[in-house]
Image 1 (cartoon, rainbow, N blue to C red):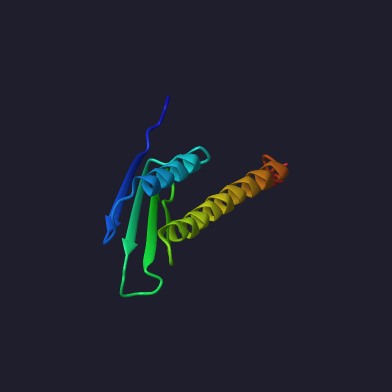
Image 2: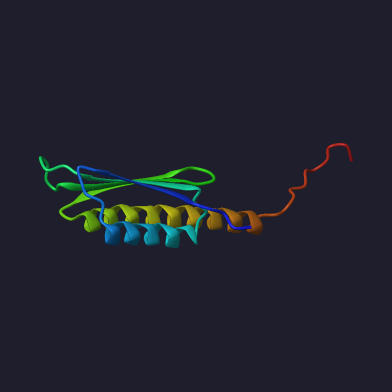
Length: 119
């Protein structure tokens, strides 16, 4: 069964560019291969009054806890790359925690026996 992912891309004070939008979609779809993503909400913003002016906000709706990342930089691509790197790091750390927990459960005895006072 193929799961579909919904990608919402919002631009604030910024024109949509096909090349950038397509590149962002590709990045998110690649991440969807390693973790189930039901919905991806990406907000790209240009704030000319601040420095750095470009910011990217990413919210991934997943089974279990959702993932959030936010970053700013002097180019939109760099801001998105920073936020996306943070998401990858979060996913790998959660995967590592899950694996360590499974390994510790496997290494401990399956059932602890209680000493019986009745004998």
